[in-house]
Length: 259
Image 1 (cartoon, rainbow, N blue to C red):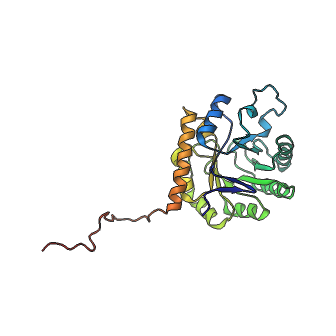
Image 2: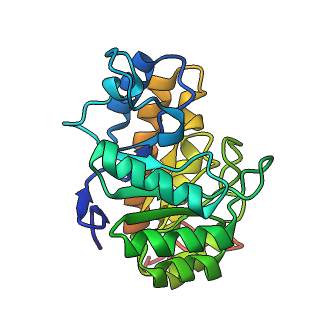
């Protein structure tokens, strides 16, 4: 069992991927990235000014020697827009790894599966390493794997909801049938949510609001780091089976009783 997260031709020792939105300021964001131990950081291409040369833009607060950038297509509602955004990211940031989002509903921010598959197919053909954000639907995940995506990123709950993993059984089915990495994306609210995702056997967790929206983002980033590490270790250790009745910690078998 690999101790590392492999995405395309890149290998990471951290299984925690962080977003960069919603922080009170860029300095807090930078400190949270450091505390989290992450090595891969998402940036919303449509929401940053790539021409900002002031030295005070989002990208100026991300140390490219420490972190790889994962451009995402947040805010895209069509396959065409998502593809163009990825092409812009490749040109501006010199990277071919992308987090693909094609939103189908403005209120829930659920993906448009048809458009997602269309965009993923074209981007893989164009040489991108594609990490698609999708529903916790094993059929869609299997199609994304067959297209050639480097991972699948099923939601745990709606983006920014903090509800945790609402359907662990769907995630388990995906884990059983998908051979590429499975990374839970969206819905993580606190450390126990991250630990549960990893205990299920997920290869990683991507989060933003759960850290950025916390009262103390830096402490929460550290908590999430430890939760991901603990959850992965517990998964690798193999938990005991669940039983309806008690089992004595100190069994009586083999003990000679006094007469």
